[in-house]
Length: 177
Image (cartoon, rainbow, N blue to C red; front, side, top):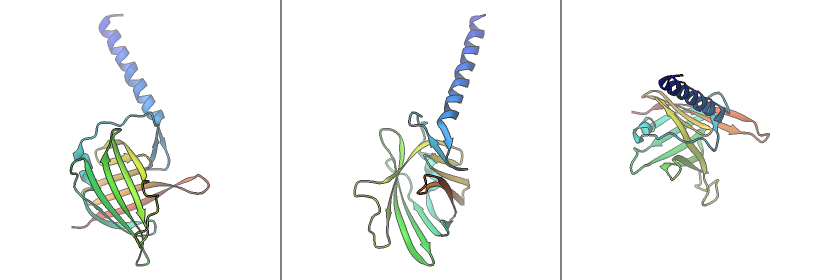
């Protein structure tokens, strides 16, 4: 076998092996959310990829009205706020940090009751590690943001019930101009 043919064959085998490992490492939790292997590495994500989140969004999710606000990225940090309203009453709010740490991009969320008492312990948060992006999606472990156009933001969240089963919550938000 010629050296060139051997290199091409070896290259194709490595590509197929890498692809199959990536497919095995990714597992659907729900239709639009994924669980990722702890060993899977995050791709290098340019900061401008997060621009799809910026702005004020409003719409429906969890059976009520939702508002979400995202600041522009500065110093590798985006700050977000979320409010959930049901029957014209605020049920809970969230404070969100999208930040870069030593492992990669991480979305940290803290929940609050309407009286500003927190759900999580003082130094704890609900964390979603970014593992992959594509043209219009940010895929975190258990959470997907999708922007089919510049005025629509869909959020898919895998929520675990007491029996250990997951259900997908879908939020459909429109940009407020």
